[in-house]
Image (cartoon, rainbow over all chains, first blue to last red; front, top):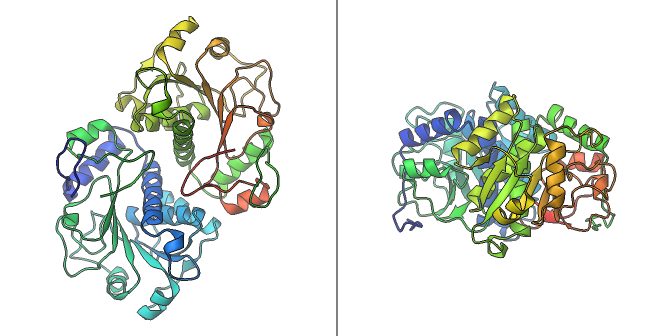
Length: 240
Length: 240
């Protein structure tokens, strides 16, 4: 819980609210999807550098595994991986079902052309993941995903991610959680990067919690009473 | 002139080289124009916060004038203005000839909806500009512009900008200069933000010079021997 400029408490948005805000950004403010995904993916990468600076990583190589879902959350993961590469981490991407939309395909090609390796399958032997990577970035499902109907290969991947011992960073919503409710049984990320606003499921989240929503027009912030905290300097993320 | 990681000297790109790099980014790396303009505009805004922090401005209000041309350089100016607003500056935009391309129109609407004022004309009485604004951002012409054939209203605007006493920040290339040659007679910016790589005209530039090109894929950097300097932390710009 943070205190904002107005001294009011943290706002946690419902699934419906975040969907409405995104529609408004795209339709009325004429933001592009490509532009939003770039802004959010970059902010996630910056948050990861704050939570896990290169010098803090326990393994010799700064390896990370970025696990991407088929929709927008996955594309944000791809952009995040690209910026992490620029920040001198060594991301590997697992992206089992690639989108057929050219918007998402372009983000994939940008990563491929940056020589970021893509895994062809996710080992079910968790020890292999623990040994290979310093952390796992969960960019599988966003707030719109139906946590009651997680299909393969994602259901199996979540079982694996529940067992990994290296820290998990979740993009926007921990995959498998209902965005409207805190979860006890799902994956247990050490870091959460909330996009636009924290979701209801982040209430009482006990890990490190970052917010990436600085670019939001003031009228949107006011209309939805987002009560964003004051971001320091030119930072695009803030730790709550 | 900077020394790079490899100890080699600063690279200054020709007009042809920067056009080739941009084509390659769009065609082979599948970057989107919207994505590149967002990255560059954001980087320009960050550079301006470094060159002119809010606390350093001489006027009571943190006012800026962003002058935008009809092509891509102008859209980068629009994105820069939007981020400067987020960083708590008070930009005003002068954008006399709006593009008919929806890509550029979307960036305009984002600024309008952020309540950034647009001037309907540029006062020719320079004192009015000196009194109203702490600085002027020149986002009129990019490296592709023909400096030998500057049309109205831009020719008149350049005459005005040559006389203003407040500092000018030029985006990529000082407007009216040939990107391939240093200029003695054109506008005289105090700050230059080079995108991708410094242009040949920046050789011997004596003002503050920033470079925004961190996102460039390593293969592009190598292929064109850009010799980029080492960017600190997660900074998207570096002062050369």
